[in-house]
Image (cartoon, rainbow over all chains, first blue to last red; front, top):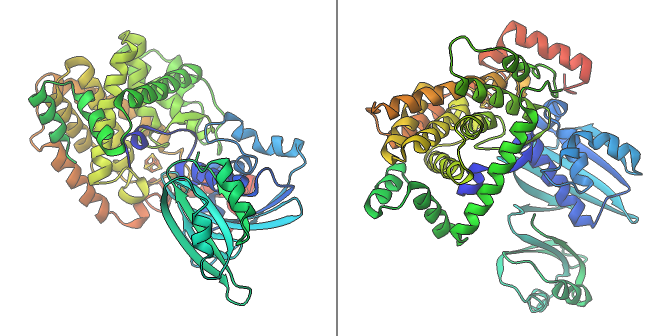
Length: 216
Length: 292
Ligand code: SF4
């Protein structure tokens, strides 16, 4: 924790783990899919499921998926704002298994594609994205984050890293499917990844999909 | 990181305590201290602005268990406490209620305990006519106290009980007040120690797990503990046990608290018949909990 973390942040209440953390998970999804989805399904687990409304978790999740920032006072009106928009949403409750007590699974549909992202709010507004489209991960979103689905063939990681003009802080690689020869690379950086890098990366033959989630 | 190191360094170098604290953050993060100060100034402004907006107003909180405490306190004229305390209490209750109503707060050190610092800084601003720079200095000293606690113990109720949240907030507020009136780092650390010792062992027992009961009222009352601790330190009263050791003790107490007394809503006042009844009612009314 830095001094500034202790002295802040500026946020909309009431709870850093139930409100701020859940908003950030949904906002991560909003940025990941590149905008507001046409439809979203929130599956709440554990303590999220038990106390969701009393902590405004429902409002925070909706606000986040619509791209609101944690300081936005419209969060409390998220339902009304969503109702006026074309966003379809639902809240469900389920046991998501061996995960943190404050975990939500978000299924979102946008431009004909379905995304499935699971995140946990681990306290003090900090989050971990633990699963993206079936691939487990552990993203803190403390950095600018690139999630790149690549061909799992020799040299492909090296080739995509060549497109990066900024310093890499962390790098993880996970195989998705040995049969289809796909892997997911998660790249975290301190500095913003410039648009040109991302364009080049998307054009790279080794890259199947590329998502950029800039830090707030 | 120890608070005594900040105090010693300020003494050795003759630099003001807030500057020493900021330099430490600058060393750690590489962000220049002018920038840090500017950012902190922004948070302070938000804090005062919000306190001004919500001061003594009725608010609609998420569960409805609180929402008119700031209002009632403002309407009453105090019989015993000073107007400084009274203003701090109204602001603290109002900010804690604003938090429960999904208003904007500065979560210093946490959202649930955001009223304490807001309350005393608001009083300094309104009644002492403290300048923005003086308030930033006091705020940074509070931050330094909280920072030391976060490094050596915890600021989370789920980990250490309410002593870690309201207790820490009160220690921070006591140090801020003492700095404002004395600029004396040693006195600040005594004030923080006295405050934290007074709340040592305080359990986290929110009714239904929601940050309203007892949280809101604890914010209001804690401003008085902070003011009392600061008055004592300013009078020259010293804490026999140094602040850093009190923090260590608080950490150990927190670890020995059973889980039922750490934000689970299962112990303390949360386990009383009235609390159970209230939660049951909320459940029926709002579908607050879906699991039976
Ligand atoms: S009782 Fe628990 S939730 Fe309420 S203010 Fe204290 S630590 Fe926070």
